[in-house]
Length: 94
Image (cartoon, rainbow, N blue to C red):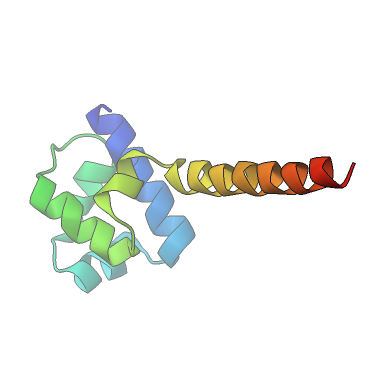
């Protein structure tokens, strides 16, 4: 991910998960609003420590941040496992 991609992901998650303004979210997690603004616009590098603060404020893990489809993948795996179980039961009944 590039700075712009990371910033866009932060902004999208902030808006969808918290519906907070940059100012309110920055206050919530204890960072400067102008720093958050520069990060979200892709103009500022972010440290892993600050990204972790942001993730905590969004109630997600760093893994979820970098792998936005991980929950969907896990859910799909569970569905596949359940379908296999049902198929085995159905096959035995035939």
